[in-house]
Amino acid sequence: MFNIELIVIFPLITAFIATAVATPLSLIFIKKFGIIDDPNQHKHPAIIHKKPIPRAGGIPLFIGVLIAGIIFLPVEKITIAIFAASFICLITGVLDDKFDISPYFRFLINIIAAVIVIFAGVNIPFITNPFGGILFLNSLHIPFLGIIELNFISYIIAIIWIVWVINMLNWSKGVDGQMPGIVAISAIIIGILSLRFPVLDYYSLMSATLSFIIAGASLGFLVFNFYPARIFPGYGATAIYLLLAVTSILSGAKLATAILVMGVPMADGAFTILRRILTGHSPFWHDKKHLHHLLLTLGFGQRRIALFYWIISAILGAISLILSSKGKLFAIIMLIIIAGGVISFLHFFINRTNDKTSI
Image 1 (tube, rainbow, N blue to C red):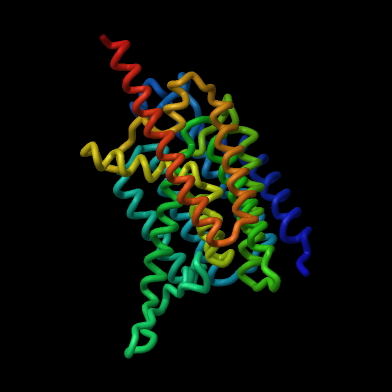
Image 2: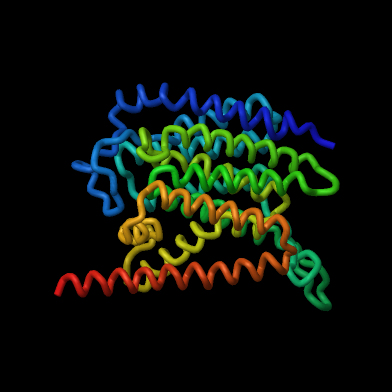
């Protein structure tokens, strides 16, 4: 049995309080150093706010997670590595919040941070085969040759997963409160998942504790980020996205559950990359055509959009906890079809409406 107070309740509450206290204190220094998103000066196609609002919300988020982590997580190679990688993401993000650095450089830093985590021992050695058994990614069975070690495959997949989660969640902060709600729900689902094994190992307990720490920090930040936001997450919040990606790996490589609970942002992210490539644009450069932008165009308010994302994430997360591996695969396929269809329809409908009004 595990101690629910030391793994769930106290870590979550500690991170919540630490972040809730750190956010207004951080605002003092953020404003002093001019890390402000001013729509009159920052010419970004996705900007929807009308007045200057501080960025760099990744700072109080990281502080909240770090304080709770120091108290409740063991000090060892993996925890040191993931927090070091997270800190690198934070520094890069804060610099971007201030100076708007190249997205290609930010992407390179994402990869470097993921590699640091992987070298510390975090990887995806296997995934559950939806049709039965286990698919080992670190070895390949070839007839007449036996088992061949292919550890690099598990490392590469882990790096791709971490970098994907970082960027997908970064695209999911388009309206006030959207991102911290998604992250909190995802972290809670992953935390519950980590505690469902009949025999809890060291890394499952670590994953659960870190998950509830992330959830607490996100909820503490949400107090100041819900519409009308007093502070934006900024790119520095990628520090927290990296930690969430790591928890999903440490929880036993249950990536299907993570994909489902973050299903709508992931589908939107995949569709965005595909759309930009097919239209001859770089997938790294911004536009105003994410799902939340489409909903804004249809007249939805920021609060309703944020609540929509939260509710869908919570429903998909709850469903993922009761589905079998085959059921999760079917749910993911249906999610891709439905989400892709809805997003495509909204693009078609809005473009057609715009064409008619321009005539």
